Length: 603
Image (cartoon, rainbow, N blue to C red; front, side, top):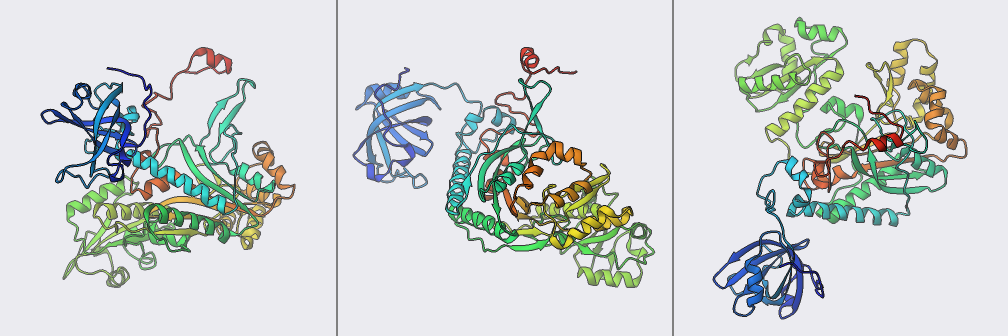
């Protein structure tokens, strides 16, 4: 039953057979998708990368081919030689590209057989993710997964052509590099030739692309693999792909223009969607105040409403205690929702899972307000509250009172939860915009130091640089924090439908500014020299002003295809625990390998 390829040569993909081929003899190859018997005639749906074609095997005219076809099973790999003819009238299948033709088999070759599949290739069969990833080569035979990877391939080609036409040069940067502080944990690679020393897999090509600017390659790009040893979510993987580019002698507008035109081109060519450029810009402060997050989904309302000023003199102890400690009070008016008490209790449990102590609420009814907290408000407070929230009968006002960061977290997440749960999000809408004017740094209580919101090579706004120098000199800690928090970064994030799809900044190209930033971040001169010495040295040899951007390619592709997880657009992804079910990685290695690397595993 088995045969070698021999003299068989495929003449066309199955999915490309058309009416133009009627009367021609073709050689086709692929997998048996399904088989049907009809008394002396066998119909085979033959599948390959491009689609399915119907093969007809007639016992009278081709007894040998019929005998072989009778023994075929799903997913056997076969070759078919036969003539193309029109399907009889009334048997056409307009849902298929090949639905008006069929191939009458004269010869069938069986290249390989198949065991019974762990799950059917048909899309409608539900399969757990663990099983799908364990047998990824079967999962990738499914139409949707195949199309996802082909779509991704097209993104690559359009991107490369776009940057080439724009005068960029594609340059590869190293995978085996040096471990540096900041950001997520590095994946480390031990060096056999240098015992006790380690390479690090790059979290991004950041330092090398800046050095390329110093080298004079003023327009660089790369579609590059990056690695981060961090906790995983649906939109995170330990290895991922960036569309990375850097430019010299530019300001923010120049870099943002290139990023806008690329994403607009991808949407136009692949989805037929026109994105209006330039994209809208909103400040980090505005995003946080209105939505509680720096990557808001603006396809629905439920914006956060500031109430701190209304309750600054309140007798309601919960709000009063929060405001006296420097906290804030905000609310969401869930208009027309008329939530039941059960629904409110469920929302309370949800926000408690985020760290809230509870959820204060008011139901606005026709002649009264229903809530355990209304009795604590003065008439003036109640009047101003209803005016500010534009409350009407049927509305439910949901409050959060806490430190500013916690209120943003609680209401920002609650807003998104409500949008999804109650289907408020306008499907089919593409909302893409920039978030700008990020703080350069923020105070991290756990680490007891300032940390970069983006990375330590981000240039501050020129007019804010004196504040950094003043903050460095002052010994008053509160003043230092106030000064540092007021410094804005020359950074910009692109947000699409509530997901950050890329970020970038103008970089620090002067060693004196970089030194001030390092000092405020608690990075000593010795540590800076040890970790970033090669970059700092490069900045002393004629570094041009430069800036860049990086798209998360996996996330862009997933969003364009309307998928929840980036794992569905990656050929061989890891699970949320960082495991590859297909290969079993990570795994133990031979003790001999560890000995060669001078490594001992400690239990």
